[in-house]
Structures are given as structure tokens and as C-alpha cells.
Image (cartoon, rainbow over the protein chains, first blue to last red):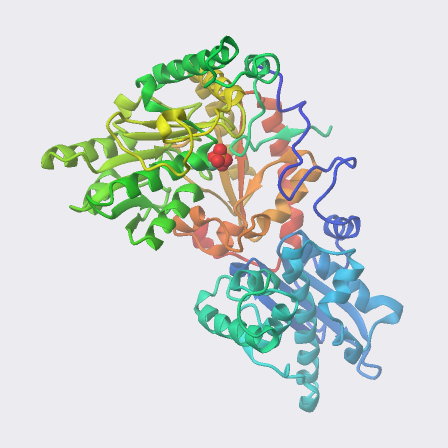
Length: 229
Length: 399
Ligand SMILES: Cc1ncc(COP(=O)(O)O)c(C=O)c1O
């Protein structure tokens, strides 16, 4: 007795290993930095008139919920303030923190610039994410686009609202048919793999039959049938 | 506050006890013989297995020939469920289990469903427990097997196995048949609870080494004499042909030694860890708002603490704790290969968000009061920080 746990080296097994720097960690150093020291998050409720656009995506049931608040300069349409709150795992928190930095760099992106940010851009800046964490960075750009639309709505510029040229398949995770198409193109050939990339139907299983249909459709379209190795 | 390394994931793996390592070492070095060989080198190995088998049988209150060595808990569960069902399918194709089983049981049952068996998955109550009456109520003429977890690996809830076993035995007597039989998974229970199969009224029992300070990849299935199993693999005559293949001699010897040490220290272990467990539970619930104890307050393993922290996601908290040297696990989907959060917490009737925020702290033999104090000091500011980042407010009715 008395010879084990407190002194023994922590295991390196599984995905999440030690904080000890000599051992590998699950996430890149950049992800880690943003996770432990998140930038620009809102540690309180927003005040009346503090922001002029809000966006939201996800739900706690599917494991991630993101909210973003923007203050947009009405003449330049530059984003002057980007604050956020995130319920989610390490990579979801780090990805939201990172996108807030990207948007605010060099005096702030314009709304049209902001809406072109792709999940891959965020992932690259984070130094990569483990494959089954992709969906976490897919969510932050969606929340941002939702806020951009909200700004146009509030300012009456309805023609500029980008109804994503697609159909929302899962209203909870806001996954669209285009998201599923991209996941299949990137090699996700089964429902499980598509869910890993997009989170579609997690916590909202009623949409799964429709998702499976779509996967089948895109698989046949791009790969001509049977699952690919 | 000085940073400590506090390993609180003993339900996932325990370190190997030094004494266990010592008895294993010769079988990794000089005593390398094959137990099936007909010379003295082989005899050393076969004697070691013989001794291990009889020492284990004694602890279980079983006969030596009722112990089958396997590669661990998963294989034992698979062998019990698939092996029994396939061998006895002519008597019936109905199986009973619960919604809070280990994956090794649930996935075996799912496989049987694909093979044409019918499985009843009993609901558990808000504490994760099934009752003997529920099991009895689900029995049918064609029920051949019930499999119930002894103590739950995630939330530590202990099931009333003795009563369930009594009902199963009565059902058997009533119809003068050899079935149904009862299998239990006792992997998490081995250090703390009664293991005597006579007292438990069970017909098959799964144990493994990795949760009892023994080797990983070593396990056993107790199978009551007279029960026939269809093997999962085929080959030589080892383990009565039910589990052929050259024996993992060091693993078997280590498993027997670990079980002996656990049995000898049972009373002391239960007393010590129960105190620390309750200190940790009460400390967390009183110092951190919006928390919920998952599992039963008293019918619970002495080393298990499972708490849901509302409004935050388990992986984030796990990693914040990791950065302070505290090692735990979570029922959140994010750390597992699957996308859904813990099926056990969901089976308690809790929504997804409560399952996503669950953290399991599992104590061990060497956990100290200082370790518990350290966790109690470290935890509140981490929870507070993550709650500040979070936009979610879980409904009050869940905590
Ligand atoms: C209750 C239970 N059953 C089965 C297993 C599987 O055991 P093993 O990892 O030895 O295959 C475990 C441990 O993970 C467990 O806790």
C-alpha cells in the first residue's frame, strides 16, 4: 500500500493524456492555449445596445452550443467587436476563440469578408484538430454567418441575407445538405463518419433517415455506389 | 496550492500491485514453458495455473473446473452471452438484460438480435438499479438467459443480484428445466462486494484483472458445472476446449494473486474508500451549485463518485482538471469514439445535456484524504470559469 497512484506517472492511454510537457497531448499547443486562455468571450450577459447582431447554433443536447455577439460599424460594415459564449469540448471553445481573433484582426473584417471564413481556415489557424473533432470548428463559422444574417435582417437589407443555398436537414445542429455532401466528398461514407464530421442528428435522431438517404445519394453520385475503402 | 498528481480513474485501470508483479515475473522470465508440454518445464507452468485456478475457485466458493481463463472482461461477457445463447438456442431465444450494462454485454446482445434472438432491455430506476421483480416479470417460457451488471462501471450502482438470482432459481425449479440461467458482470465489484457464487445465486460471473490491481488482458468466467457453452474460438484442448489457445500464464497467476489481495483487504478497503467517497461527494455537492449525484447514495461502490456539473461539457472540465494534475473520466460524447453521451446516464432518465456534463471520479486503495482535499480545492474555480464561458442554463428540475 502507499506505493501507487499519487506518485505513479499518469497513463498516456486514450485520447487525453498528460499535462506533462514531455508527453504528447491530445490537442495542438495553439488549441491548448485558446482553450485555457480563451480570447474575447463574454463573461456576463450582454447589455442593452452593446451589440447589433447575434448568432446562435447548436444545442446542449448535441454537445455544443455557441452564441456570438457582434458590434458592426454601420458605415464601413466592419466588425468592431466579437464576443461569444460556448458550451462544448476543448476544441469547440478553442475554435470559437480563434475565429473571434481572426475576425477582429487588422481593425476588423467586413461582414462580407467574415462570411467567407471556412471551417478549414479556422482549423488551419489552430494547427489542426483530431479528425473526430472537425464538427466543432464547423459550428463556429455557422454561428458567425447566423450573426451576419441577423445584422442584415435588423438593418432591413433583406436582399443581402444569404439563405445558404441549401436546405437545413437538422434544425438543431443546422447541418445542411451541402454539409453532408462535403462530408461525403471528404471520405465520410457512413452515417457514423458523417456524424463525426457534422454532428447531424446528435440529440435529434428523428432526422437520421433523411440523412442516410442523402449519404446514399451523394455516395452514388460521386463514387458510384458501394462503400469505399 | 501545490500541484499534485491525483489519479481518480481506478474504474478505468488500476496500477498493478507490486506483489502481483513479483509473482508474475518468473513466468515472463525463467518459467516460460507451455503448460501443455509434457516435460518438467511445462509442468511448472501448468502447476501455476492449477494453483491459480484453485485459489480463485476458493474465493468464489466454486469448484476449480468451473473457472475459465480469458483475455479479460469483454471476452468473458461475450463468451457467457454468445456462448450460452448459441449453445442453448433450441430451448428458447429470449434473453433479458438491462439498459445500464457495459458495452461488452450490450453489444453481445445486439449481435444475438442480429442472429434472430429477442432481447428485453429492462429500464433502470433513477438511480440506475433494476429490481428482482422486474427481472421476474420479464421471464418467459423461452427465456434462457439473464445478464445483469453487478456494480455499474459508470455510476457505481449495485444491483440486488442475490434476489434476482433467487427468482431465476425459482423459475428453473418451477419448470424442472436447466434454464434460465443468470450471468453477472462483476468486474467493478470485485474489490468491494461479495463474490461467493453460492450466496449470490449466480450461474456465470465475469471478472478481470485490470480493475483489481492485477494485469490487463487477463480475466475469467465462472461457469456453473453442467452449463454448456459454444466456444468463440477453436483450436487445442485448453480450458476444456471452450477457450482454446496457449494460456497467458503470467496473466493468470497475476489475476489469482490480485484477487487474493483484494479479498484479504476487502473490509479495510471498503471502510476507507467509503469515507473518502462520501467526503468527496458531500464536498462537491455543498461547495458547487447546480450539481447532481448520479447513481444511488448508499447502494453504490465505495470508490465511485459520479457528478453532473450543469451548463458545462465534461471533456472541457476533464481537460481543465488534467491541467491541475487530476485525472478523471467523463460520460460526455466528446471523449469517446461514439457521438452520443453515456447511455447509462441517459438510462437514468436524464437529458443529453446532463449526461454531457458528467464526471466520474473513481478512488483507489492509495487515495488519501489529501487527494480528496486537493480535488475539492481545485474543482470550484474550474467549474466557475467554464460556466462563465457557457451560454447554457440547464433546467432546474435536473439538479
Ligand atoms: C463492468 C465492466 N465489464 C467489462 C469490462 C471490460 O473489461 P476488459 O477491458 O478487461 O475487456 C469493464 C472494463 O472496462 C467493465 O468495467
